[in-house]
Image (tube, rainbow, N blue to C red; front, side, top):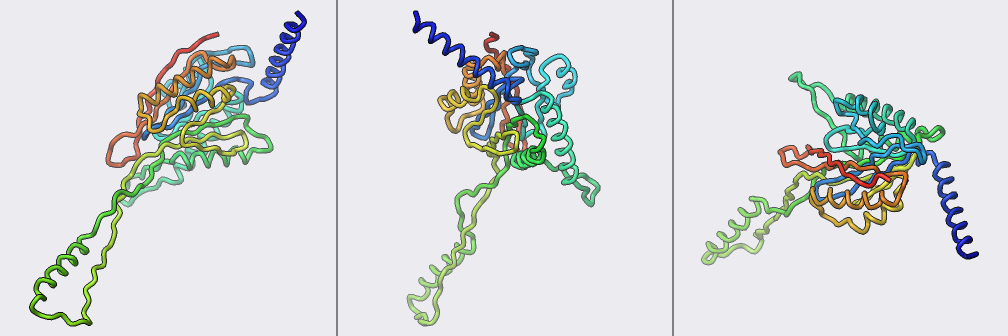
Length: 313
């Protein structure tokens, strides 16, 4: 009997310590978790639907993007956690304190708009050039903003995912000049069977290699702390109160070169499994899939939204 009482007291003390640590950390006061995974020419990010004040649940509506037409209405009636979608290749989400998240979102929107406006210009024919920022540039801008406010920091932990356009080299090809020189050497050797060629004359081909490049869209994953210290990965990143559980489930289920639908299934399964072990997250989830499209420019992507259900206790 004494052993049972001692064990119960130890468990109660452990729960109390965890609760005190949870309340003392401003980034975990409102709850929330994020998981992002990379696939083959695609990337998926999962965000939970719970918004609370410690143990108290305030809202269980799905997060909304700041680029939606009904963003204001959804924010008034549902989850105030906002997502930034600067372009079709990048998505910015974060966990942390609600008020700091709003200020961070507004300042990032102003910085992104000014950067894009400064990079754009007018052509001679009067048309405006279209400029978009890649995910790595947006990640550097986010780190710069957070570190600039290190004395009065935003208590947020951002996660940036997207597809960056890169050039890769294909198989090398031989130029036509090399082929012509080889044909001329073969012709001279046949005609010189009768006529002798002076020893001072030497015909040496000068082969040249030509690399053919193509444009692909490579997944980019980055998470950061509230001071802007970046952590990139080629597999998955996570943030929020359930990050410990997310690391375990994601490492167990993730595989390289996952296709779009399979990536959504694996990401959603790992995310929901981790949320069932944390009471500060859950109440459903939303998975956003950014997948490359086949076009001539090679810099456009499609963003698809998937709504998942989970336990609500």
